[in-house]
Image: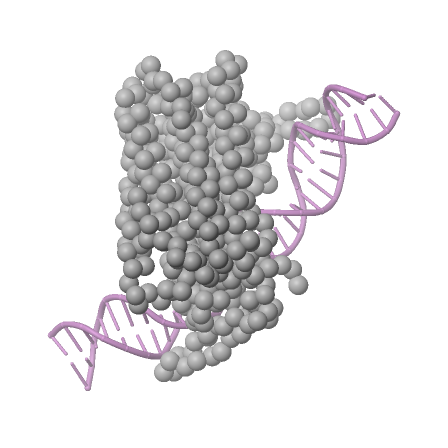
Length: 198
Length: 198
DNA sequence: GCTTAGGCACTGCCATTGGCAGTATGTCAA
DNA sequence: TTGACATACTGCCAATGGCAGTGCCTAAGC
């Protein structure tokens, strides 16, 4: 009887769009939700079964040759639960970056290591941006599966574009700053006060 | 003999600055590292003990009245391990936002709910910015405990400022867009293509 | 017609994490 | 001297991450 987890509602949300097999759900959680709600595929299988237990989804076995697969669909109770959840307060946003930990403790290592970490961050952000641009273009295709939801998706897509653009710009800036230092301890006369300005 | 977790290295990093009691470590993980490496206080107690097991830290029992506390210090092996880790590749950055999940599935709920979610995101980002500005000012105080590390900290602080500023700006923009819609399904003639530009 | 690479459709397992609750002592101010 | 709040942890359990393993299906290439 305990409340559903955020992941539970995320799965209901996907089911509100259409019915999916668990495998498809797991894929979709990686591909679309993964950008702002990263969860391992593994757990989606458990979560979907839980939704059925609580009456928010129904499952049906299909056969593909001799192989069974489970298709999940949302129930009216599921739709109500989703709508209610959409009106609730959200948990604070979380950011997790091993690279930023390395930047934070950079004075325990070499300047080259710091520069490599910063360059890695820039490259990662650029890669993500390339993928996002591809997604933005795909929205234009009329055959796009979620055309009904395409417009609202633009909000989230824009968030991701802004986010990764910001990371890429910060990393480029930080690299330039650090490149002028003598070491991670002796930063020359670097003007950190100016770095925090606007 | 298995490798240390990222959290393990984060704790070694803190110990590289000075010695701490476990309670202080746990606090510090919340206050400073928490911005980009959020972990519950609880686990820090276990993690510190693990560092001792592996020889990266040493512990000493002190007495405050009749109450015992454990102080942890870094060992030379710990310093070496930290320096090595600083040269390794970082795991990809992760972002987790329940609010963005609600935006993504907003068409299952009311427009008011979407607007409330967006306003919540803006307010949260503004609050974080206020705290960060306070931290930036504290850097100016000459008595600042980490004055040796203050300069390098400016890089990370700048990241956080940029990040939360971006969130606040996006949320404000998204609110304005959504405020003009008729519902979460009927967006009027909203130009989503333009929303993805620049 | 046969092989094989890659996608589909899961399940098991276990270490790590999150999060809450609980215990007990220390300190400072009213 | 009585709270209130800070210090200093420990226990417990559900949720999560991540990897490995099983087996079937399909399409391409020889």
